[in-house]
Amino acid sequence: EATESKARRSGQTTYWLIVHALARALAPVLSFTCEEVWDFLPHLAGDPDSVFLADFPGEAEWGVWQNPALAATWDNLLAARDEVQKALEAVRVPKKQKQPGQIGSSQEAVVTVTAAGETLALLRSYESELAALFIVSGVVLVEGAPPEGQVVGVEAAPATAQKCPRCWNYWIDSASDDEVCLRCAEVLNPT
Image (cartoon, rainbow, N blue to C red; front, side, top):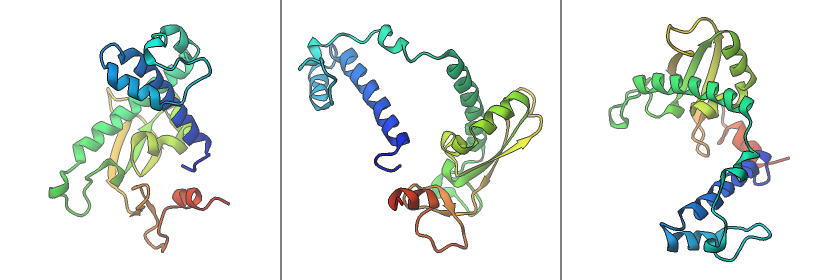
């Protein structure tokens, strides 16, 4: 992502929150390592100079982030992701044994996801993020009943586009002379 993009900054903030809490939680066990981590972390006003003077992370500080509706949404998205990962694993071939038309890494795949009802509506509302969530190069949503016992039906096929050397996704049109995919081009050359 671009240096100042909201997606990148929110990801960095999340990483910081996790490392800030982990350094405090692991300090009694990994004292020297956590003290070094603490020295490198950007600090909030009021943070002590030593991790050993900081409060142990507690549930109260994470309570403000709790959102049961969002948690339920992500439980459903992750259940669909599990089905996609199972389907990819079933067709994946070890790199040294891979033949043309086979899938080695998940990014070499385009998946067709079959869903119905609320699950389909949920997936459609997150359609632009599904490729990143499933770690594939493309997602096609189809309305229909998934196989019995599954949240969604999944068919995986090799991506037909060219691999972008920056993000490793197969997003460059085969007939194109572009060096990187459109997403990476926008990040590298913002207008």
